[in-house]
Image 1: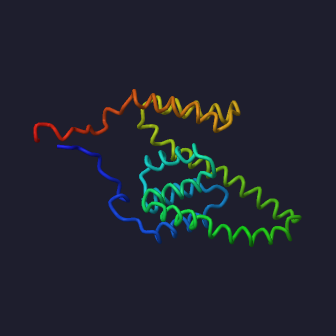
Image 2: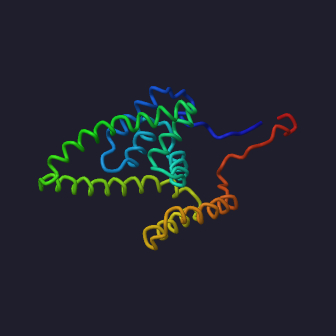
Image 3: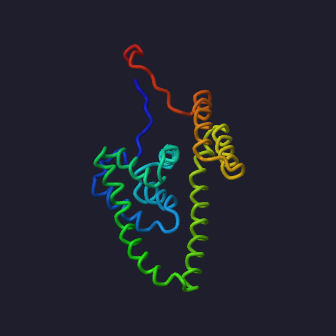
Length: 203
């Protein structure tokens, strides 16, 4: 008898194109300063489209690809649930609202950029964005607590390489990704469900 891990709640129901569009539309409109913390809250905690582990895995893939992480994430999530149409629904929903808002704010900022109050406002938004990124990093790192120590070691090496040694992100990913895959293949989680073949004597 074949044993498989239980599917996530989102995979048990069908995510429609309208839901993908409105979900990423709200994400785009609420993502002030930094989109990744809001993306995790929307996709994992509110909409429950992905589990925390699934989000972390998908985010890692999106960071390895060229382009903005959240743009890549909207395409990947949409593709995961509804194929190419879902990818278009996700990315269009993500950029529709912010595009209109940015155009309007750009016109307003051109007229008020010399105002000291406006400069203080943007300074406060930058500080808030930094805090949101730290909060998201903590949440994304939580699955590593259940992972083998090698996964945490890879995360630390990536942080030191990028933040400390100023090594480019692409170079770091190209070096550490094969290493992490190799280590993961050697240290499989013993708690993971074991698949048994269909030829177990007909059981």
